[in-house]
Image (cartoon, rainbow, N blue to C red; front, side, top):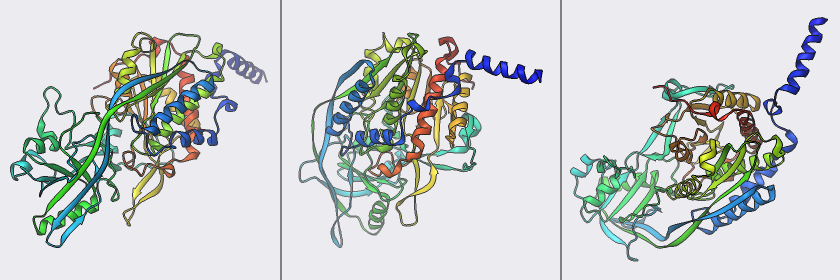
Length: 501
């Protein structure tokens, strides 16, 4: 009896002594599924959200207005000037023994324009466009046909070498799982010009060097016959016109070239003009000037429901939730940031970090960056079409080395059952994390970077059906709980430790 009374007293004391945030979220303040989905629908209302284009400008205004409606302070809408590259027409007409045939194609972003009549030349197949492939063929005055190479993302090495833990209560992972990383091109490395770079890593630049008049890329590892691949999006304007073909159309072209040596006319016309995009931010002051930066990017190649409508849906969810928490109960100042120009070499976030180096950046103790939430896993079926696998896309959590981060994420994942989560080091996929968080990481700001990598991110298949609405509220609660738990810690406790080699 005495023991039971003591236990009761202890529990009562814990309720008053332990900060409320430890026990989770106030459900009355969490946006509903319908509310979050409406935000995402509204953000994705345009034809596309390419930097500086009408759909993205509309999304910027929408996010700004949402921050105003939530009562955020110091709301900023800051312009970043760009050069808009816009394709007007494109085609590939192949002339063979049986006459002319147009093969469905899509433009390669930021490449050179042709005259209206296009450029004509013999087609030369160069496999993956290696230095050896170019040495074995003459492409001068011709059109180079090259298989686009993508990296493969295997689960096993990440689990074995670079993971902190895997949360997969339903045991859906296989050690042998892998998928093409369609955002990571292996034979068009746009960073090759960096000091010490090697031109042989870029088949496109090899084609320029060897005198080709155009390039045709075959998306051999992109699921389905989709050709609408929006890349590379480094914001660098290039001189040689290029087009993409879907993998089945590309195979048809290769079969034709195996029988004869056809020529083709490649057309890519368009315009370049001055443009502007905008970074949006808003602030919720807290008891401390120490800042947790909560971010995603607002632009997208097409409709962009996953890339990154859902990421912005989470930013708005957290902004609304914490706007309902009194300032006296917010342990840290929260800055909500929607960056521009992820698809313009991330020029927006770089500009914002420089502009605010003496205020928000200087006081930031953590960046929670959120990209590609509630993404269904779609795979190619036997008919060559995208089909829902019934699983969620693997969730990657790239985090700075800090045991508090791991504990907070583990607690939130368990509480909200956000399965298929792989929590890894920031260098799991290279020298720095993917996505926008790499820029805050470069400045030494500790990061928790959530991202998934479905193969439909950069193509026009990133539509509403790729979102699992049932995942939106659990995801929002997960991020809210992480912020609440980590807000209780000091800057010293939030600091990142060096990664173990």
